[in-house]
Image (cartoon, rainbow, N blue to C red; front, side):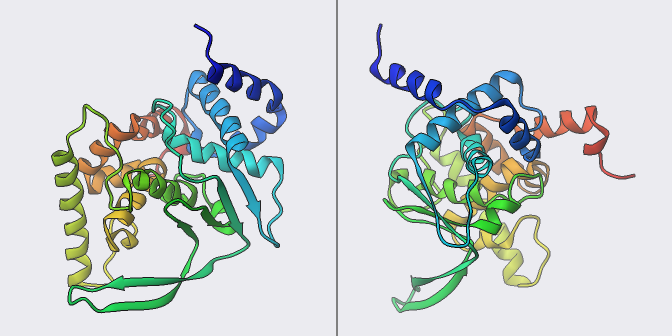
Length: 270
């Protein structure tokens, strides 16, 4: 059966091909993609082209966006969606704004007694409900490895979280997932992390302590680790890892372990 959407998709892919040299250069700069098979890489490539056609990347003064930069950002944006059905996961926003450095933005919080606190905080990224995604360019450039940091994935995880409204750490789960199992895994790990920091605010935590800010940040940080440091996340919070694997339909830990078994560069020094 003829489909207008499929025809439009095919037309976009034909009009905006990625040159082999550009693809190879960008791929080589993103270790986080290592271990994906040819079929996965082709899907990721096509979805990235469609993403760049659908979303506007706005570079503020001080940021120079080259074709390689655009593709590099798009590939990281699409990695979490690689094995998800085409649901329109990044609906609700049309623009990514790139700042030349970290930025300050007003914050507001109502405490348990009803008192509203307002202050300015420095951020490297921000995602607004029904608004753009804001990314600091240095953070984008530092993303893409297996170091437990990925600003692109972190902020777009917030957009997945916001599909049901305000970010609360609960994205729309698949039909074969149970909300009670998700809530139990996430709440238990979140409480454990907060208990550690309450006992010692300077404690060395297994993941970025920013995850303890609220459930929305916990989901974003653990999503970030799921793709960029799956071994650390699994070791610290195996049930969280299992829930994220069920949600994203991926197993980055298995991919990383295969890389470690097959490539000397991925093995820990003796």
